[in-house]
Image (spheres, rainbow, N blue to C red):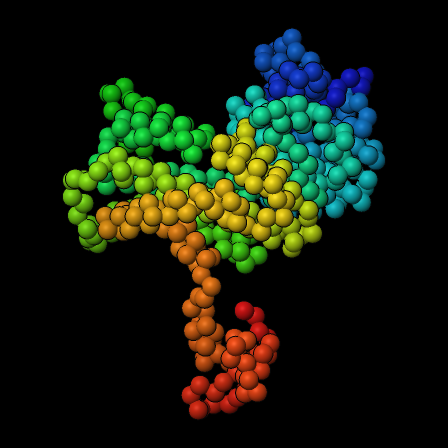
Length: 492
Ligand code: 2AM
């Protein structure tokens, strides 16, 4: 079946995200053609949510393509993986050179790289776009992170930037970079989201078990924090969750099993950080914390055998420790974002992408799950200095972390004394102390490596001599036994 080319964009995948994005696009004056593998969903959508709007339907890929204005723009919002490849193959016979396919799903960036290259050979412009903000974001304004074939951008800019969330008059959507850069940045966004959530959970745990506050009191703390430097969507929903009572009047959150699920984007971020050799420790701890939570039965057995400190009824200054925790959370969050941006900088180098940090921060400023006032400050930092080496070198964040430092140390120490785990708070502080250390104990580590494996070491410039020449891989016979053979590569 063919039709008139009436639609500005086609959208495949009518789960809630897809439906909401179509409605959002229609609200902004674009005509959308909807298609879904199970075509009964097309009819149901047209008869209900889409009724009376600038939305048409298609019952085949051919019909969909025939209804699109040129160059055709087709957006996929289907399950990541095989479904994306399957639709690409189904679309190809009905597309022409210069047409555009956008994958708005949660695809892993190497898949997007591959699809970009594959479709470039065929003259089709492929775009992988991160879409964040959940169902509500898709309907009212998500954060959109498109990357891939840049020639597609002039044809997408208007639709994407109109439908995206707007903050301070600017859209939370801009071109991210080549190939899978859009999906990459979305992956890091999700990793940072893991970190933010873990930090909030640690604060909740300390306030509950350490300070002894009720859920309502903790909700009030989050309410207060939401009016300060921690002002963010995740703090806000945490406040609401803590206030939410079940039919029996008790907080529902306390009835929820303490085993965290994960879909993989946090893990991908951590794996990528390991691959690129970047110390993104907070996201790593956040992923491992979910893993630890999921071995619940084993923890149950451990809890009966392994004792820790008994937490006495809190007799200190509650207001003071609450303020200290706000500072600890803020400082840890600064570290997490600093690490995230370090990772993206390294990825840009490794993959040959040009990533615009201010633009990325602005894309995350609104619409998405990690949206916060804080991201406005990060945007400003990178706007002031696009080449900022590290977020911690920006005057604003430098001052913030200086101010927070004593409280942060107090909170991490208190967690350890109470025996309440604070992996994210703690790793953030350890990173900070490592990052600001001119000298780390890696000298000893290099000696150990050379001792047992002849892996060689380098001499500090001030100790260079004929015996230990500078910029040279040196091996020492530490034991007086064995040979003087050294491993051939120096891979510190
Ligand atoms: P469906 O309604 O026909 O199941 C979210 O699951 C979206 O992805 C839905 O629109 C779903 O279509 C689609 N989807 C999931 N797996 C798919 C596959 N293997 N092929 C095509 N569409 C798929």
